[in-house]
Length: 183
Image (cartoon, rainbow, N blue to C red; front, side, top):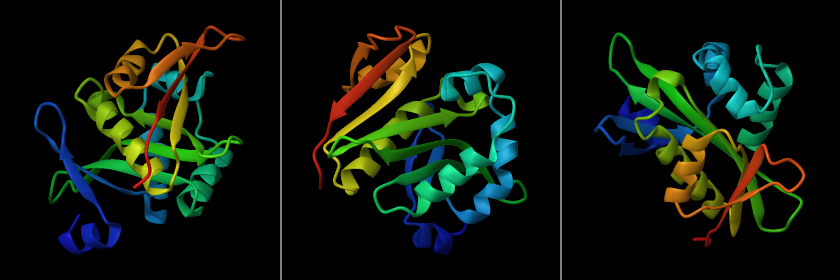
């Protein structure tokens, strides 16, 4: 990723817990050519944790939902990139999105991290990005549905001051939520 493109993307950067530099930028249309490759970098377990059902294929409906979210003013989609430089280039390591809920001022998030980057702080970085996306779009509350078995994600959410409560109708799901303040 060159400097000009980072400026055009309004890319920001941060470091993972072990020091790797990561760029956060909006999802681009050109990123969709790598969508299947990214999806297959997620293990069956990671796909289950993200989609909450066994998922073998990245559906066109999911891709269309991402396209819609990346262009709607009340939604947001960001990806985390590690830039290895030539000849390897960019490696997408995770993504996050927000969409509005039916409740005024509240958005819902989802995120994923490819398996080889899990446990290195990418989930923490992406959940902070969710807060940033929500804040810049004027939301005052962000929430997400997390499988109760996904203890790593629940731990990340708690470290970022998200409240967690079991879903009364389905204890296999935990709702995490946090009040935020707009910029």
